[in-house]
Length: 401
Ligand SMILES: Cc1cc2nc3c(=O)[nH]c(=O)nc-3n(C[C@H](O)[C@H](O)[C@H](O)COP(=O)(O)OP(=O)(O)OC[C@H]3O[C@@H](n4cnc5c(N)ncnc54)[C@H](O)[C@@H]3O)c2cc1C
Image 1 (cartoon, rainbow, N blue to C red):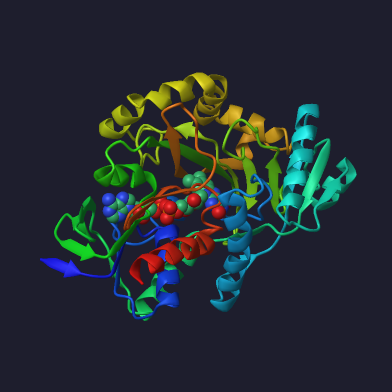
Image 2 (cartoon, rainbow, N blue to C red):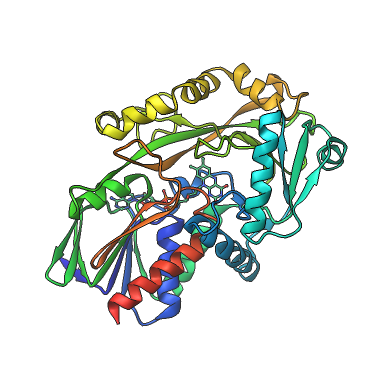
């Protein structure tokens, strides 16, 4: 059976859903179907993250991350307010614990200002302790805009609004092929086929595989990096009020293990960043032969291993040893002890890597005629989802009209 539509979206994560929502809000008469392989939306990165509404502090001024995070931040707040989704702007502190990190903290401050943040404030050790009494560091940076939310709840609300606007959401259908047929696009699922005028692929951890269907020489692969969390036990002393971040390693695309208060209660510590042996390998023992061999045979992978060998070993050590994980956390909160923590959840980041072993830092949207592929949408893509969705929706509507 062939189903005819105008717009076909693959992936029911926050980026696919936001894109669909922006299309339907701009042009409500559009016939749109979104196809998701899982039984419900938000089952991968969108449902397994830190839940932080990022302010736009970290990103290179002018980058897609910076522009979409700043615009998406405000859109996310407006959306949560309009839809009564629990969220909180609690602010965060970034804390330098060594002299080299002091330079990194200054660079963050410069970037924050260049990205239009106001109210950033350097903190002396005593001021750090006024905000977070158990935190120690040489200098801190207070970022008032940062907030917390449950992105799974946000994505489910996008899906609910899409259904009200008349979009069709198909769950439990894995897209196995995408092909251009004349000026139409054929999206082939396990049990049915759709034909549309434009297709947008927002498949997160599987995005490169679907991009290679229409572009076999795609110069990228997705490498999966698992992020593991611990959480404070119910009986642990209250050592953290809000959000405490380290100064990130500028050579590594992840933010470093941090303390995050969750909007539903509880404090999480993490995530680390270990190369995962499968794209959906949420547990240390999960393994997928196809995923692993595709990563290992990608020329860029070997270069990543060489480039990040020491950092990667440290991440594995902290993954396998709770004591090592706790030691990393003690840099920020010296009083924290292993018995205060129990294992929490985990998420797997979809990180695009090129042939030269560069981990793509910025968002990457690849346009291939009437097929648009979101090839790299790491953090802060959840915060930025409505802005990314608007950018892609504008491209979709210009192809349709
Ligand atoms: C550990 C971790 C912490 C993070 N913390 C934050 C944070 O605090 N703040 C922030 O803004 N961002 C954060 N992020 C990033 C954020 O979660 C992601 O950028 C965002 O969720 C990406 O959304 P997505 O829709 O692109 O991908 P996903 O949520 O992974 O969605 C992709 C969807 O495509 C579906 N799919 C894949 N293949 C197919 C197929 N063949 N057919 C049909 N469907 C398919 C999948 O099932 C999935 O539902 C974090 C990410 C991780 C992993």
